[in-house]
Image (cartoon, rainbow, N blue to C red):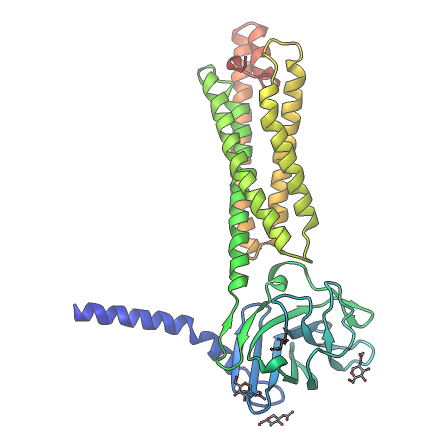
Length: 393
Ligand SMILES: *[C@@H]1O[C@H](CO)[C@@H](O)[C@H](O)[C@H]1NC(C)=O
Ligand SMILES: *[C@@H]1O[C@H](CO)[C@@H](O)[C@H](O)[C@H]1NC(C)=O
Ligand SMILES: *[C@@H]1O[C@H](CO)[C@@H](O)[C@H](O)[C@H]1NC(C)=O
Ligand SMILES: *[C@@H]1O[C@H](CO)[C@@H](O)[C@H](O)[C@H]1NC(C)=O
């Protein structure tokens, strides 16, 4: 019993040792090129960077060094946002190698909008000794800041990019780590939190999984069911119910996923994934049309039924093509884009393989029927692709 308990304690301590101080260790072992020593440091979770600092309680100032890997040409920036957690209103320090002078330049700049000028300017608090170094693909910014209201709990934001406008830092990437590089930091304890970050990442993953499964997987599967099962006479009523069931499930999940996407979009002020969003809205409209058109379906023998069928197939194929395109658009926004992408490509390629195989089977069945029976049967089976089955009446 005691052995068991100590084993558990050991495992818990080992796990904590693995997880907790690793960031502190990895940043404290980094050398800074001004060979100054800072009391505390924090490895930042994004953009391979770290913050090193010493807080002076006597006068409410903090000496900071922000270190990040960056190529030349490229820029790095770090700042405190005294009012909110994100980009706008961040009081930042930026560093880059000036293409005109060829030397490293560093200055304070106030980020007043989502398209800031990034020109040198005054901050809302006092800052002094802004310098920077650049060596071996690492840039570091040094400065001394007078903390606003002597507040040691700060919201900080950091950034990196290789884009420039006329020798002034330009826009950073609107996705991936570049929009997750913010958090809160306690300058006294060194504790940092990026719970908002994790929360956004988790909501994105939920959105991604819901939509990839509904729009990207179930809907194509529903089309495969409709197209290939109906050839088999024994599957006649069954394929129709399977098809409707599959597409309705996909639609319900898809609308839920669409809702999470709208919420994510409205929460991410300033970062717009316009293409992904527009395709998403178009998809919702087309799929809703498709569901409601089910109730307007003319009787199987009605002479307008052929037009309904053409419409139903055109919209159906448009929806699944757009869905697959939009799933890939979504991967561009997600964190772990590559692994998601690979998994989805594997799934969709499998579906395509199954569809190709069934297409061949269908033609074999149809041609065999043609040779055995009259042409009427052929008309029934091949044209089945443009023509709903018996129970459709
Ligand atoms: C700043 O706050 C700390 C405690 O948070 C306090 O010890 C210190 O005296 C304050 N300094 C100034 C200049 O107000
Ligand atoms: C603040 O205090 C520290 C240590 O007490 C000192 O080294 C530093 O020069 C002071 N800074 C200012 C701006 O007074
Ligand atoms: C920055 O502040 C200084 C002194 O407070 C002032 O002289 C200067 O004009 C300010 N610069 C800008 C760009 O506002
Ligand atoms: C500083 O404190 C004052 C009064 O407590 C408050 O009105 C102000 O908003 C604070 N400023 C910041 C940047 O937190």
